[in-house]
Image (cartoon, rainbow, N blue to C red; front, top):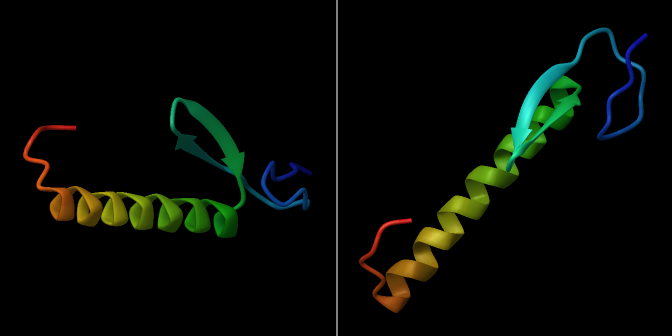
Length: 58
């Protein structure tokens, strides 16, 4: 059985998820958690840039 690299549990299937430049094979729960963390990080970065008046591109 495959093993999730995020939680080290044996699962039926793994998903390939990009984390920055690396690709990780994670279970569905860990993949969802990683996506949510990425969305939160992008949103918080946008808020900080808005407060600082940043008008450039990322």
